[in-house]
Image (cartoon, rainbow, N blue to C red; front, side, top):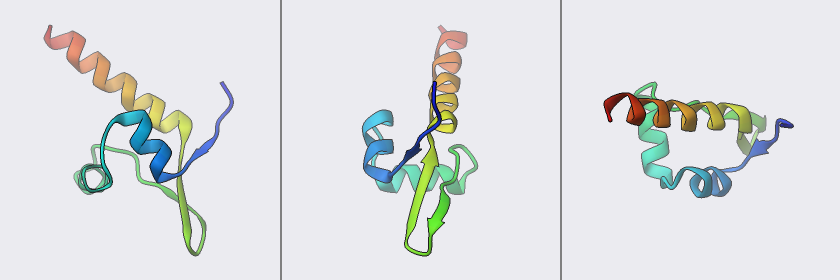
Length: 64
């Protein structure tokens, strides 16, 4: 899969989380932080968001 940069609305759509929750998880070290693309633009590498999603599934499956 090709790496893409995801802006916040795309990350919200992929994860089902809202902005406040995403940034709270970043502060707790539980979600990848965005990278700065320019002084006013940030984005997340798609592979890091995909990895986070896979860890969530792995955790769920380990508990089940």
